[in-house]
Length: 441
Ligand code: SAH
Ligand code: SF4
Ligand code: F3S
Image 1 (cartoon, rainbow, N blue to C red):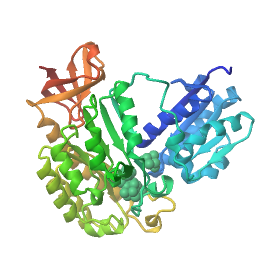
Image 2: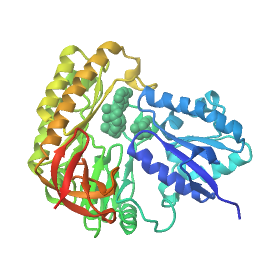
Image 3: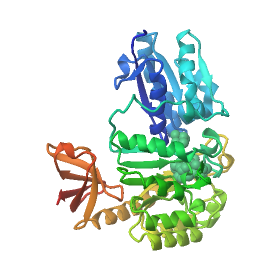
Image 4: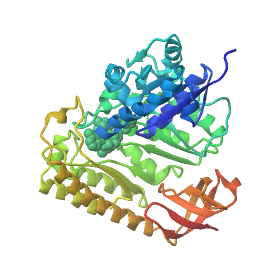
């Protein structure tokens, strides 16, 4: 019997990485690893990385530099890099950071146990292949049998992207779009519910392009959502991230009909100017996006929308940027994420001339000021309403609990600690930019 080894995982990037980190911990559990939150006593440190913007990738190299002393102190410590930087930079990481023992791309996580064994013999292990087999068939469910879980969980239903937006690394780091079979997802959701989960967020880089094998042929995301909604004890369903061009009629209808499907939709548009959208290879216009939102809002009038924006994309003029502001004023997002364009190696836009950093920074500041104003208005509009809040965890102050509104807002209220996992009708009494305060009724 080998003794337990300690695994420390640090996760960067999107929610899919959060989900993957759990699955990797599960896989390494088979090799005798238990998770720790203290890197200094770990036998293995795994960085699950993100390559989406330059800063995200650079963070990984500086983190690896900081891990050097730990490795000097404990030569048996193994350091691994997983995720999208691993996929994109593979061998380069081994060259640039000799502390690294293992590099594993997102489609090879099921091979981690073998790779770990290889590092224990003093060799380096690298796998950035896109194998034929489905890694999820070979990954055990996270952390042991029937362990109790937090009330909200992620569930990857689709991975990869075939859209090839001109700025984006995801189609290269995650590979082609693949949907997981529906029966597996229903089983995984039931298992989560048995472990105390009452809200699942279905994940995919293009989640609404989901078309997994199911009873009677391929299922759409709408069909999957409808079937998930039949699971007793599963109270809330969300999904992210969607592409406007995959917002099908049946999915829009589901928003009007499936009560468990939460009225919140992250639907990135990236820019409000058609010439920029064309340069980005988004294959939709600002107008088609706005008409789409009209149809979604007709099906579910109270739906809250969030979006992503890139400013300073190559060719973006002042007038183009004004179009983005105009689109935001029309939509009034409940929440939004905005970024300066970051040229990514290997993507079509990376060779184009982009606007100066000074101009991009100024545009970002203006856009964020507008988006913040809209977010504040949306928060303020909740005051006086009674909302069902799913209690997730204890708050900072004694007697305080924190939960989520249907619109993905954090809400503080006074309640007993054993209310975790319950949905409590709550009157919203105060709004802050990033949270709401409520009273249970
Ligand atoms: N699959 C999702 C998310 C992709 S990454 C989608 O299709 O929307 C999340 C966000 O990062 C993107 O929506 C985009 O706004 C931003 N992003 C992606 N590549 C970028 C780049 N090269 N520079 C700046 N922001 C980028
Ligand atoms: Fe990237 Fe575009 Fe695919 Fe989203 S749809 S993951 S932005 S290529
Ligand atoms: Fe980052 Fe990869 Fe997610 S690049 S955003 S971790 S898909």
